Image (cartoon, rainbow, N blue to C red):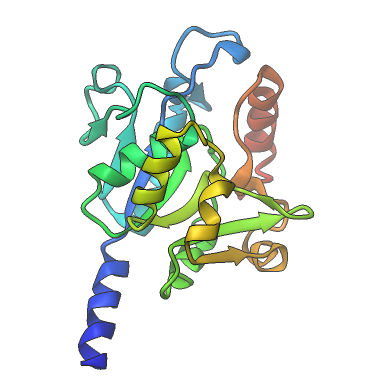
Length: 214
């Protein structure tokens, strides 16, 4: 019986799906386009992210965003609540996924380290959330693994207007990937770099030119 349970758990982990939250606008960068389709070094941000995720999950990728804005992508699902925010996108992606465990990232994170993501996957075990924690306790909810067990508490919190990711933690089993662990794969924490403002975009271009993130 224990052996069969281990096989089932291993199969659940092997069926990892990636969820990309692509609802963000680029108005703070000075564009009226969705941030996901802005081009960095000639490639859309979302395509850069997808190219990294494929090393971990193959084609098991869900994009949470407006389907009409991403017609050329395989699986795009809309937000299931009218509210905006991370929890709404997370809930919508988890609900659409066929996998129990899901790697969730933002569409504007071009420097994700595949080795770090793989390490996080190896730490799933029986946890519900595997999430990086660094810089004196800061957590990175947009580079984390979530199980479908999160769905029930997320739905309740959204309905009550409680939209902080941390508020779901007391109800779930959390595995923090600590700073020293992260540094083994990503010493400068480039995986968590996201493009929110014009200066972020310029910095991303400079980092690519200098090849500092490789």
